Image (cartoon, rainbow, N blue to C red; front, side):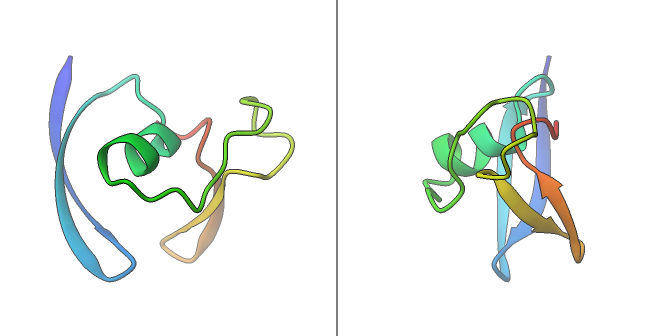
Length: 64
C-alpha cells in the first residue's frame, strides 16, 4: 500500500509517495536521487547504508 510521507533530508523538505515495504535506502536513492548511502549487504550488518535519523544512526537498508 502506498503512503504519502513528508520528511526533511539534509534540511530540505520532501514529500514522497512510497510503498510501506520500501526501505529508507531505496527511497533516498531511487526517489530523492541521493546516492551517498550505498547498498551493501542488505541485512543491516555492513554499515554501507548508515544514515542519521533524528540524531541516531540507522541502517537504511532495513528501515522502512
